[in-house]
Image (cartoon, rainbow, N blue to C red):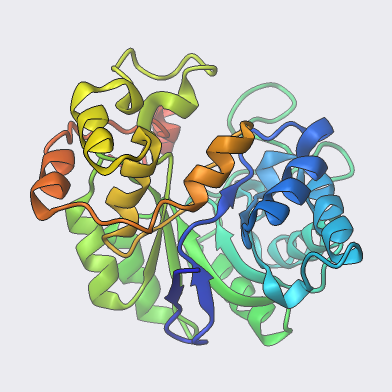
Amino acid sequence: MSAVVLKRTGQKMPLVGFGLWKVPRPSCADTVYNAIKAGYRLFDGAGDYGNEKEAGEGVARAIKDGLVKRQDLFITSKLWNTFHAHDHAKALAKHQLELWGIDYFDLFLVHFPIALAYVDPSHRYPPEWWGDDKKVHLQNTPFQETWGAMEELVDEGLAKNIGISNCQGSIILDILRYARIEPQVLQIELHPYLTQEALVKLAKTLGIAITAYSSFGPQSYVELGVDKGVKGLLERDDVSSIAKTHERTPAQVLLRWATQQGVAVIPKSNDEKRVVANLNCDNFNLTETELKQLSSLNINLRLNDPAEIDPRLGIFA
């Protein structure tokens, strides 16, 4: 299995993983178990997804049945915005490990560079973006405080690697000014409609591995009603034409566009054939012309923008 070697630890992060966003709780354990059976070794979760307990049950069953050992898996999770204060960050990481039923995360990310008012997990979890009054409440916690807590998770063996998500160049450079342990991974929205070449180049220059989410563009957002009315990448004739040339699916072409740049991907599917096909997306090569053709589709279409929830959350402004 192709992998990205992380700079600080030398740990190998699989180039293709399984994303757990929007995987329903009732089916999540079976989904994870079957994905492991199909050959997936990286699982990308988050506190905000609300399915970590069930994902952990799938992992535990696979280990019990002898499909894998814990060390064969690369489990990623993320710290939510309401837990950015030092003590809250550390407590929540431990809580999330308990939900998963594991002793450490292979990678733990700060989900957004946004600090929101604390919500006690015993009151409501995951808390999402809002208070009980359905309003967004900001909290004055500097990112440096949050990052210090993340570094302590490494010190204590609770996270092998730490990283960031949804961060742009300026905050990445700022983190490097004070980080004792540098971010190992940057997870960002990345697809041919949002190519972010400058950010990708910066991360590579700094030795920060990149994971792309929403590799199929608007596809993941249709059911949420926020696909912005743009034609899906999977339905485009130019993408289908490239897929036909290589006797692959359009999804495999879109994933290969990323992985051929050394960018990890975390697709998900509820269809067994597509689950297998997505995993086998790195056993062919696109031509330079095809890579450029796909990149030329860029329209800077950002589908995951917190500013649409509240303008004060304009981290991509």
